[in-house]
Length: 247
View 1 (cartoon, one colour):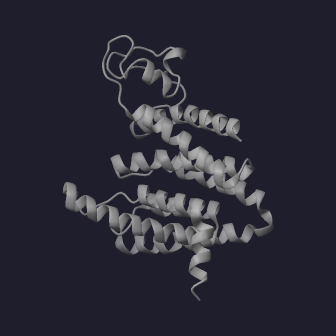
View 2 (tube, one colour; view 1 turned 45 degrees about the vertical axis):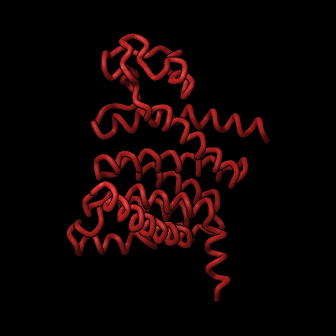
View 3 (cartoon, one colour; view 1 turned 90 degrees about the vertical axis):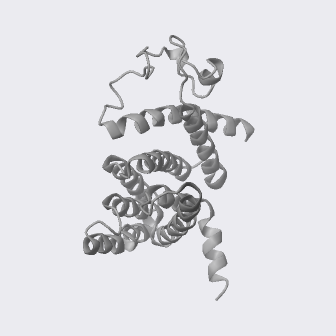
């Protein structure tokens, strides 16, 4: 099991390196596959030995090999975070198809959260990717396919009504699409839990941010909804079981 943990973590940080590319280029409308990685200051095109996730940053002491300019700490942090998220997926779901699907979902949510936090916009392509993962999971668990189909509408339909009535002021269109895609992945019980938790996270954390750092009332819901989805996937069964036990 120790070896499997190491292998999954290493795969996670490698994928995390690609997530950094997505975070930087998607908001700018740049290609995430054709343009080679380079130093943002001097344009130096990185060699293969410059791109070992986490380890290259440590070896280069956080600076560009050519110009010596500081490299953003975002790169190793995202890589390490994705590795840890993949480990959590392994610990919860074991080595299975679900574990692979959940790992990629966690990666998508990580990218989505940072982009939405910075730009107040959830890229449509990421929601499509999550929906595709949901379709695969529906096929894997086809004996209860209806739970995932209901999940697609369980939260997103309510949010769509709020979006239309408020003309986009009450909720963002990207959030509606996210909860539809997430519902297809989670099923109706877990997507409702994820939404409730996401709203709770958003309310508490954003109020604290408003008090501490003077943030405005407008908030990006993507990161908080992602936290709710993460919690539902990791602890959802226990939370729902605890809630039902009170009746």
